[in-house]
Length: 201
Image 1 (cartoon, rainbow, N blue to C red):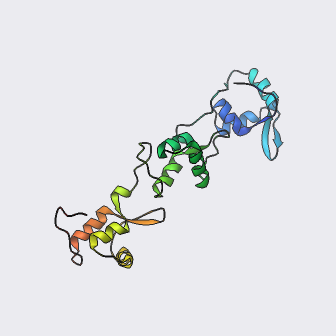
Image 2: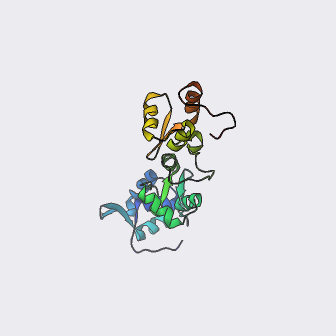
Image 3: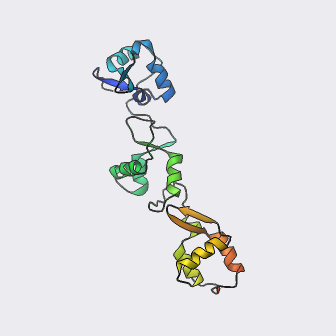
């Protein structure tokens, strides 16, 4: 990579440069030859000191590309999942506060954090194999329940929510009913007529 002796590195920059963990990067920063300083509230290492130390050792190697751990997504990954631009993915990550502090030069999101967010909302949908299956196929929304029961009032549905033993799932701001639990109740009740087999459900 192109070297510059002007300026300084943050400790987190060492994670990307040397492909090491934050703990290891912090330990490296404490090496006396690096003359660690506090600049604007953060530990920093002057680049000229870093390169002098780097040339004197053989344990660590500087990599041209930032390190991307296997359990993280980049904004490029997210853009591919939702067929959006990288800038759009970047804005999504910032709005939802999903960004990780693992890298100082890349916007990375921990996969588990991203998956948890994904299944908790309804706006963004994708059939990308990297993402967990959303609950839509296994649940009914309120309009589907009204159609099955042949009713129009939302209040009737909410009454059933409270009275019957349905498994409810909340996705974003929407409350949905587990299909299996609803179907069991529907087949056992007598208040609402059941459609003949082959009917549209």
